[in-house]
Length: 362
Image (cartoon, rainbow, N blue to C red; front, side, top):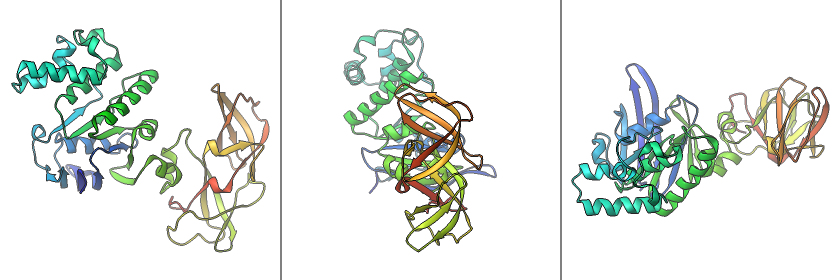
């Protein structure tokens, strides 16, 4: 039995339904990330698990106990928000132990638990500082420490790194991953950043407009996206999409035509999502930037350079296809192209993705 279960969960504000019968589960000790664009309902789902939002329909279970109508304080969950919400007049020690103090826990036990949380988060030397004397990353660790001392059944993170700069975000991702490994507690993490999702999650839940688009491991979603939305959301830089047509096929393979392809592309459908489109029907060809190479590959396409961005070890090249689409490719080292310069890029057919006119993966 799953440690956390959401069964047909719905949420409406008046006549506006924002969560549509969501079914999600998490195993004990699993790290599950809710990811999706702003407004997709991921934070609303998390708040319903925490008890901070009323559930309009469906049921929520934690450790096989129905908690749909249980008060937040009795759900044994700890939530870390985007805002640190620290008491500015209290020391780090007092902030971490505040909840225990309000629960009338003896002072000796508070000190023990605060010291243990500080050890886990490697902030023993910060316990006597005030929040104003801390960096953003250190403040977020205090907020996490405050959650740790509650010994929750679930950790809930609502975009906890959004207020940090890029370097601190990377550092805190590592800290949270280590924390999960050391504590072994089930964690649900909300983010709109697919890099955070890919690096932290055991499983990712991709949401759009209050509905689940796909659930799977980071590798599953990267290699086998269910539709164009997931394919475009997972991966950085994002997948290229080219408007193509079915040019032929023999039952085992499909021939794809596009003005920039020097010859028809022959691909084998990855999965059965209904009938294969007929000759002449539109499809979308998906190519990840890291799978496109300059002047190599079995399948070639002619592009016109628009811009190149050198990142040190790699260069992102933005080219324009014959039909007007922008094609991004990622190549090793330093490469520079003049605007309007023509070049050839290639790719392996096995690394191409194909989607039907409704956006479903073929």
